[in-house]
Every structure is written in C-alpha cells, then in structure tokens.
Length: 138
Image (cartoon, rainbow, N blue to C red):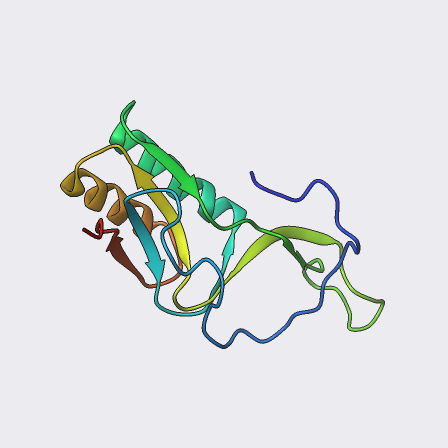
C-alpha cells in the first residue's frame, strides 16, 4: 500500500473537494493515460487495485506510471464512540483527485490493449474517467 514515509503533521483537515486541476493535466511519460472527470478522494487500496488490474492485463509488456500519490491522512474513530474526546487515529491515506488530473499512464503497448487495461483500472476507482492518447505533433 502507498503511504508517505513521513509527514509534517500526522492528522490533516478535511478540506472541500472542488475546482479544476492545474497540475498533472498532461501526459508526461506514456502515450496513453487515464484522466479523471470529477473530484474525489482515491484511497491507497484503490490505487493498488487499479495498478494490479492493469499490470495483470498487460502481462510483461508495457511500462505503467502512477501519477497520483496518497499524501492526505484520513482519521476514523471507533464505532459506538461518544462525541468529543478529540480526533481519532489515522486510518488510511488518500490522494485528492480533481477534474482533469491524469491518474495513470502507460507506454509500450498497442492502443487497443492500453484502452482495455485502463478500462479495467477505471472499474476499481471511485471517480469517472476518460481514456486519453498523446499524439505526436509533426
């Protein structure tokens, strides 16, 4: 599972999800990518599940890049816990995804194969996505 080695503060604020992405908006490494169409928190488990689905489908061919990383900590208090008594312990980590962000990139395989692999990955994610292609400019 992905998680930060060290953070400045253990617990983070729950901020509103909104606005369009200004970073991670273009394909940087691969020829094909998976772009988000809405805002969402993607957990480290969901990222790992999507990565495994893609890797297993393309087998040994192709190179995959994960462009998002779960930096944000999410806390959870136990069930039947009374109100008050502070914030709960860190439960898991999430990546904050905004509309227009590239989530995954892939290189070294055909477009048909890449599209199928990205579709399998998209089924594992809580965000609506779109398959994007980088065309070489002549």
